[in-house]
Image (tube, rainbow, N blue to C red; front, side, top):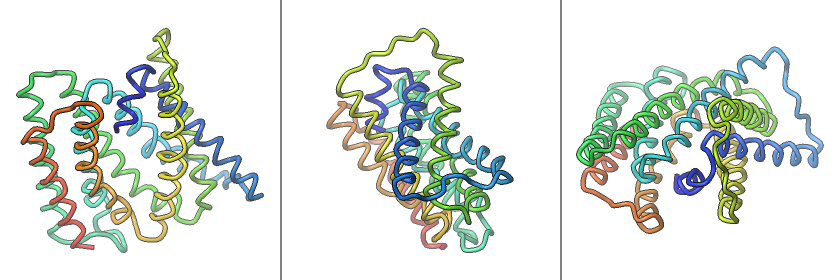
Length: 269
């Protein structure tokens, strides 16, 4: 979230997101070519792959990058950390996933944490920041749906090829949104922005999504999203140190509740 916040200060959000995924796809396709692996996927699976790209990349990334223009990075990261809770609820009852009363309890606790963050923003009186936080909450819910879809769509497909195509399609979707909504907006390139783009493409694109699909096939959708345990705390601290964003008591309380909700889900799997 810190890198996204820095990037959208000079580059329109949909354009930055689209370029990120295009570049990531090119890197991954080049890696597949070097390894002499097949990059084509079965044609009959293409509709499901397009749907997954929309749910796991297009909508969540579009919402998050747009929201980064108006919301605090640490706050948005805290709200995004609810995605495992949505994943658990949506994947409830699936083989190898969370079951029982803890699913409902975790969702309640996590959403209370998000509510504290929203209340804090209402107190600050920033309408666009509140809208940004709502967009990220919707993105987290969409991502939760995507993780469930990924179990069905990509469970038996080659990881590298699946990841490359998801990144490419995501780049197409977000670049199309940029053409529709950001035409004529100024773009200011700096060495810092180039570094941000490379980081988002390689580390937060190729590596992150590749590991995500790999883990879904092996440990399930809910366990795969447990990395969000670490995101809110790290993001709040880094946003304070690098961007000067204040760490308020409601933000801290919200982070604790979100992590507590995730802990409840962890014990049910």
